Length: 442
Image 1 (cartoon, rainbow, N blue to C red):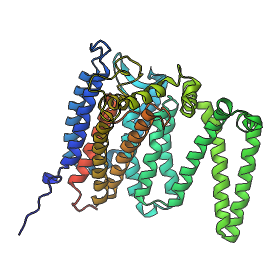
Image 2: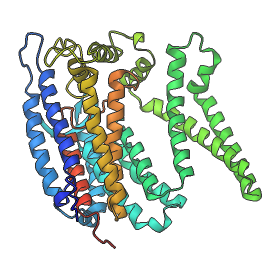
Image 3: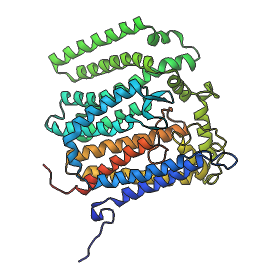
């Protein structure tokens, strides 16, 4: 009789997930060090030392949490969420302004970014709520309540304003609701509303800066009185089609109601979105469409990042031999554009190693979701993997110029303590779920 040993699960600990994370963090430290070296080969930043401290302490957090029973969090989920909302409100009112966003609490050089931890706490509370209402998960009431749970911290982060962190909540919500078993039509409608809101928000800027002749179309998005009339008209049509659906139960009335109501809501929200967006955020959208609109201003980041990525070629210029970072052409190069430095110095095949490590992480996280016999654990795992995947896609997309700049770091590689500690805490919970995946739960 042969005994099969699964090295990834020996002692109930997922070593594949753990080691993939460790490799990424070590790579991150090396390239954070590289980002602090100037063109003369002199180290001008101690960020790599701080990152080492955060990696070590983050590992302690991960290991301690991984051996605890994650289910005890249920008892504190509501109070953690409520306390988090209060802290976010205090941050928006009295926080320290960094890079145009009032998102930090602390004194002097010491501080934390509460919005990072709020992502994990919201995931925990939403998991608790959805598990508690698992019998009613397909009802519109539960869907709207879940949306409110996500919407409150998201709104408080938007007023800081921190658009990048705020938008992370959207894909997290969609992934968790899908795993929980929400009606697909609700998820599709919400996704469509979000995409239309983004489109309607960007369209007037496209017409102003990119179109050869904007014509009269621009007033559809800038004239407040006209926008009010259009919104009311769409709303009335939605009500009429809804009445038609209620009386006839015909499918085409349902789709018409969905189309006009989603369009009305998106059109209405786009007006407020443009009011909330700051000038530098607007310019980020514009230069995403065409960086050459402002090549030495807002378009500089994208142009230099794409140049760095492209100049790395297949095998890169060599460690510490990149020019874009060492000549300080890349802004926020240890955080937002760490992938650009990595691409320039180790090239395409080096990036493949990075991507393989992330794919290992996603694979192991999905494995945890599928094997957990506890809905609470599965939902937490889904929220965390959704968060990491969104950071991964957006940050790399920013670096290669196919996504607008949002200030989202590349988790495990980018410099930063708040983001890393939050993620390590989340991974610790994931490992706790993995350890208890075969245990009976009520």
